[in-house]
Image 1: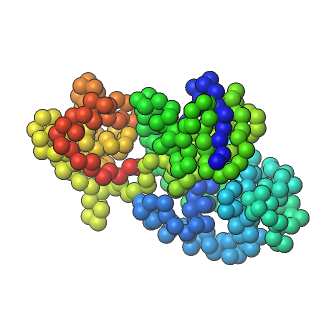
Image 2: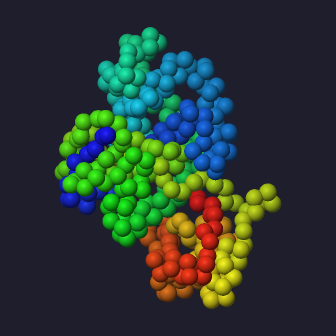
Image 3: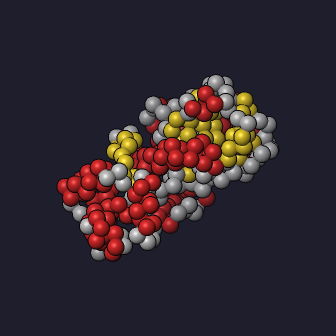
Length: 340
C-alpha cells in the first residue's frame, strides 16, 4: 500500500482548496470512462460525451495521449499539477502547457507501465495538446456549470471541517476516499498500491474535492507540496423546480411531530440540512421565500440547532449535534436532498 509519513504539525497546517483544473481533469476522466459516478451527473455526461468523442476521433494523437495518460494504476504526473489554492484555471493549465516534452513522455511511460505507442514517440507537442484539450473541456463542459459545481465543493469542505472538529483527523481521513485511512504513528495511507512510503513532514498538505469521481488521485511537487484529490460527498443533482422535477415542500421534508414542535416550515429547513447548504440553496429545495428561510435560520442558529461557516464566497449552514439528536428523537428519516 502507498502511505505518507506526516507529522502532527504538517497535518495541523493542512488545508482544503478548490481547483478548477482538478475539477476539469475529473471531468476528463468521467468522459473517458463514459460512465457517471452518480445518477445526478448523467444529464451532464449525455450532453458532453458526443462532442468529446468527436473531438478525439478527429485528433488521434490527442486521443492516444489521453489513453496513455490515464493509465491502469497511475496518471501521468504532468496532467495533474498539484493545486495551490490561489490560482484560476488559466494559471493552473499554464503549468500543464509549460511541462517539458521530455518529462511528459517520461510520465506517460510510467502511466502506461510500458513503452509509448508509436504515434506519441518523439513528439514535443504533448503538453500543449493536453493543455488545449483541458482548456476546451473547461470552456465547454465545466465553466458553464462552475458556480453550481463550486457550491457543491464548498459544501463538502464545510462538512469535512465539521467532521474533523467532531471526530478528529482519523475520522475525517478514513471517510475521504476509498483506500485512504489514518494508520497511526504519523502514517497516512493514500491508496492501496504498492509504492514506497514518502516522508512529507514539513511540506504543505492539501485536500482537494472534485465532483465526478469515485476514487480521486494524489499529486505532489517534491519536496514542498502534496495533494490528495478526493470525491466530494455532494452530487450534481438538478435543483430548479419544474413540473417534471418538482421539489418537495418544506412540510414533506420533516416528520409531523417535528413540525408541531418547530413549525412546519422551520422543521423543513432543519430536515433539509443533511449536507451544508447556502440560503439560496435552501430556498430552491424548500420552495420558501428568501426572507422566510432567513428568519428560520436565525431561530435555528439562536437555538444552536444549526451552525454556519463561510466557504469561499458562500455562507453554508449545517446541523449541529443537537440538531441531529432532535431529528432522531422525532423519528426523522433522512430525506434525500438535491445537493448543489
